[in-house]
Image (cartoon, rainbow, N blue to C red; front, side, top):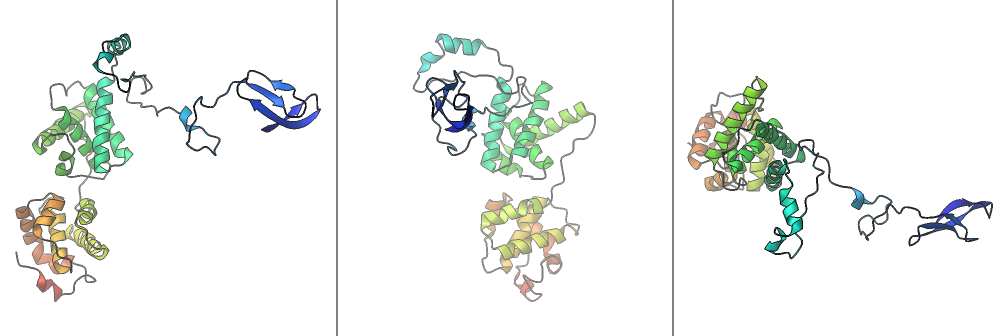
Length: 312
């Protein structure tokens, strides 16, 4: 129902839209005000947002500037319940004959999206990883290399560039079988290729121990006060000349903080949560131990409480 001007009634009246005929009819005199109207709503019923005027089923997927056709090409999928004879049918044969230059990119982008989703990464990191892979793919230099390692390395570099770094071990856990060594080699290869192409060094972003700390603390189920103390301790540790990797420092600080808290965590659990070997945590703890009074915040532990720390 709606309102429109009726020439017979010579005033505005309520009109009724006849969906089957496409006619707009005056509700008072029956005059057809408009015929054969185009119904722009969907031809099937949708249960999404029925109370609103916008119909989401008429919206396609977003365009992808990294693909030649913008990602708007049509792919004929296999019907539900169809057996292997689909590809031998005429429809399947035409689908296979159609040369889609973006087929490799589409599969790669899907793999990156799956890995990113499993790690809980945001869309900006996913898009950056896609851009990096597209640049490497355009150089035609990844043929014959471990594709899973290349894609995982692209995601690792994207995390670094977006200031949301992940450890190689975390990336490895979702890399479809690629090892840490393979991902590391792939990362070095990609960086080298892109630096040659750009003619300048590639910006990777600086890794800080604090980038990993909150996530590691969450895995261990530490209290908010312990997490706050660990963050402050990590910040102060950056002022010291501790020549250890940021991940090792983060693990050692967590080990130190948990010793001073009521909820103590065994070294094995910290090693599993951080992906750092127990021996490495002990060595990093040994380097931090002399500076415990400088880095541990006073609101968390007093001077006499630091005596409870085990000597390295």
